[in-house]
Structures are given as C-alpha cells and as structure tokens.
Length: 270
Image 1 (tube, one colour):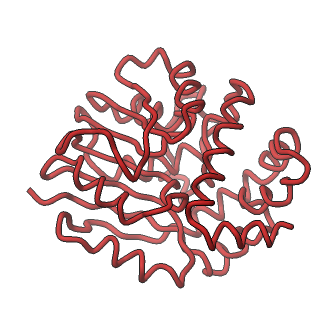
Image 2 (tube, helix red, strand yellow):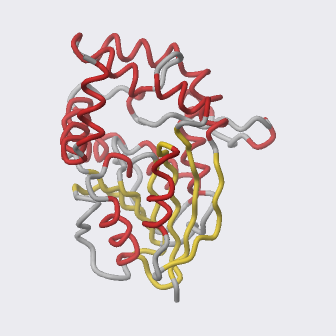
Image 3 (cartoon, rainbow, N blue to C red):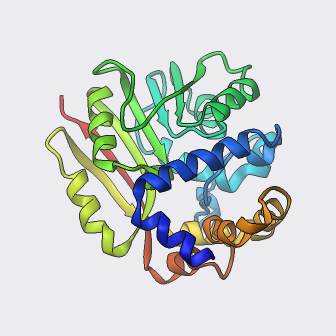
C-alpha cells in the first residue's frame, strides 16, 4: 500500500498537490499543540558553535527552527518587507519575525485551516500576517517584496516552473529569494534548468543533506509518537515514509545521496 501510494504521488503532480492540501487541512484541525507549529525535516550543524541562539521558549523546536534560520540568515531580511510561501502553521514565519525582524512579514499557505490557525497562534506578532494563496498564482502586485523564503515546500507544487516565475515577479528589483528543499538526484538537472532564468542570479548553493539527517536522528522518537496519535491507521506506514523516520525510504535516500537536500539563494536583477 505504501509503495503504491508513493508511486501515484510521483506520477501525478496535481494529485500530490491535492494530497498535501488535505494533509495540512487535517493537521490544522487537530488542535493548537505547539508540536505542530513546524512541519519540516529539521537541520543540525555538526559544529555546536554554529547552532542558532534561541530563547528558552523555543528550545523544543530547535531542530525545525534551525532549518528556517539556515534560510533566513542567508539573505537580507532585517527591516525589509518579507514573504514566506508555504508557511503552514506559521512557526517559521513567527521565528523569522521575532529573530530576524523584518519590517513586515506575510506567511502564505495553500490551506485556509492552516492560515486560520497560524493567525490565532501568532496573533501577538503585530508585523506578521497570514493569507491563503497558491504558490503558482500569487495574488500580489509586481515588485512587492524585498525578500521571499520557501522552506521545504516546493516539492509539493504541481508546476514548480510557474512558482519560480511568480517569485521573480513579486520580488522587488535587487530583492532576494532563499530556498531550501530536496529532490531526487536524477531530477536535479531539471531543477537547475528551472532555476536558470534571466530574471535573477544564484548567489549561494550548498548541499545540507548531512545536517538534515543529523536532525532526523534526533527527532525520530517524537515523530513516531505524533504519527501514532494523529494519523489514521491506513496511512500510518505512508506517513512514516513521508516524515523521514529511521529506516524509511526517504531517510535512507538522504543518507545515501539518492535524494539531495539543498539550500540556495538568488538575487533578482536590478
């Protein structure tokens, strides 16, 4: 069942997009637990000196936050107008707002339930707002933002080329885009062709797979508990695969290089 389900997801991008919308809507209805504020694989640098400095209240989510910090610290954000595409329950956008201090921050997500919950959970952050929208058809004027971030989200999109075109469109001239996500190694050449467009230039490009696996090792038990408590029985095996627990196909693929986790930044031409 698990392998059939994953095969269907790979074959039909629109099915994948619809599935992820269903999953995020389900999570958004499951309660206000802080455990669900972040939904990414995490990041842990091998050098403790490079770990993100956090307030005590944020320590439980350190591994997830550090992936966001990898994205946000790579581009200018402080005092600027920023957008996150694929904001989920808003934990990452809230972190960027609190620690990197943009003048304003918008979190956009495909799931209205997630947007509603994020708005409620982070209502004390007055410079942060959440809106529902489609990454492939952003409802913002041209040249709207100084900085755009996209964290472990674009692999879910049905048309990634449209997404990158939209990012360029809504960025101001000279604006920055920070992207962290993964792809099967055989798809990377196609991805690079999509990134190679005249509207911007790549400024940094690195592989962070080892840092992600290090985080997955540390978060293994917590993810198993969440799946056991919140995922319907028929889908538990599939979600153990999606979540990257030890022994899952995606965990092994990150470890052996079959799937590559990347972090890139781009600057729109002035």
